Length: 454
Image (tube, rainbow, N blue to C red):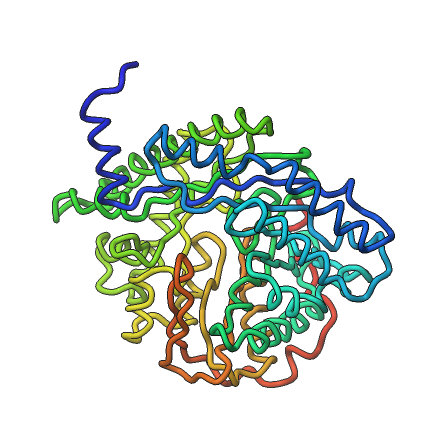
C-alpha cells in the first residue's frame, strides 16, 4: 500500500515537534565463551568479543537515522550477567570486568552497557556475592557500565538477605560518587521478575535463553501520545481516549518494528523484541505525567492518577502488539521521576509522593525509578522500600524494580542534577517509620500460591 503525503507529514511532525525517537537500539551479546579461570584473560576475552560483535552497531544506527529520519537517542549493549561467567575465576575483586566493559563501550562509542549483574532471587552463590560486593566501586570507576540484581521472582519469592544487601550497595554507590551528585546509584537497579530481553538501562541483560547476538529496540513517544490526545474533543469519553491511545501506540511501535528488522539484517544478528514503552525525557512535552493530566487528572499524583495510568499502560500494549509480532522487554509506560518534567513538577508541588508512586507501579512498567531520597535515610528504610516493591512484583507476577538515589549530604527539597536523559531529581520525603526489625530478619519470603501454575 502506498504511503500518502498526509502520512509523511504526520511522521515529520512527530519527529520535529513531538519528540518521537527510537529510544534505543540495544545489541545483546552472549559472553559464555569468555569464561576463564584467569581474570586478566577473561577481561581480554570480554573486551575483544564485545568490540568485535558490536563493531558496526553505531554506524548502522547512524545510517538508519539518516535514511528513515527518526532519531535514535541511545546505542547500547547488554551482556550475559557478569556473575555467571565470573564463577569461572576465584578472584575476590571483579571490578576489572566492569573496566573491560567500560573500555569496550568507549571503543564502540555507545552510550551505556548493561550486564554487570547477578540473579539471586532464590540464593546467592559465591560469584554472585563477589560481584555484588564490587558493584559500588565498579559503578564509581566507570562511566557507561550499568548494574542490576534480581532479588525476587514469582517462582522463588523474595531473597530478603539480598534485599538488605542491595539497600546498602545503593548507599555505597551514592557515597562513592557524591562529587557527581551520587550518579553511581542512578546506574544500579534492583529487580523482581527481571526479563531477559529489555533494551532499557540500567536493567538490560542478555539472558541465558537468548542467541549469541540479538537486536532489541525500545521505542518511545510520550510527546506524540500527548499531542494525539490533545486533539480529542473536551467531552470525549474514556473509550474514545482508549481508542486514540491504541491507534497512536500502533504508529509509534510500527516505526520501531521496521527499524529493528533492518538493524538486525545489517548487523547479521537475530531480530529480538520491540519494547513498546512510553519512556519520557526531561524535554518539554515529552512527559508521561502530561499524558495523565491530558486524560483528566488535575496534577500527576492526584486522585485518579493510578486509574488513568492503568488505562494508558493497557492501551499502549494493545496498540503495540498489533504493530509487531515480537513485543517484549518491559513494554508499557515508565514513570521515572528525574527523567520526566511533569513528574518533577508534581513531586515539587507535593502532589506526588513515594507512596503514590508505589501504587502507580502496580499498573505500569517497572517500578520506583530514579527517585532521589534524603542522604541520611537508614539502610533499613531503603530495604523496606525495596521489599515493598518486590512484593508487588511477586504477588502480581509482573516485573518491578527499584532505582533509588540516596542524595548524600542533601535533604528533602534539594535537587540532584544529572543532565541528559537522566535529568534532575528533587529529593523526596521518605516515611520514617520502617523500624529496624523487618529488614534484618533475613531469610526468604516464600513464593506465593499463584506460582504453582503447572
